[in-house]
Length: 97
View: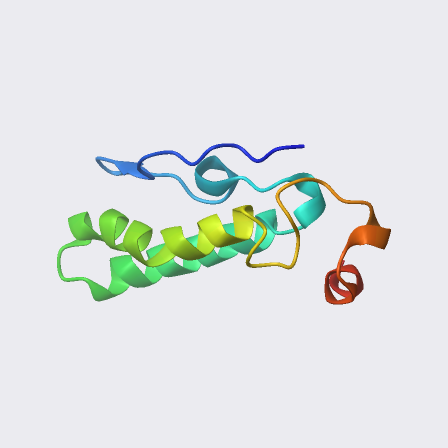
């Protein structure tokens, strides 16, 4: 199972993609919900803290993209890019599942 390629931008006009729409992980990674919550929290903080809310989508993407892509690639959660049997996963990853 391969991951979906990243998209060039997570926002257009007032629309912003979060969670699996912006950064889908493979189902066995178990990271989809946590990434969606992180995305929503950072976007909310950008909307709250920036004087021009129109800048929030770009700021959100700037703050989130690197971490999200690391998780999708398997570097942020201890899993690889392809599905693995639990016996092949690092012990820390299995205990968190």
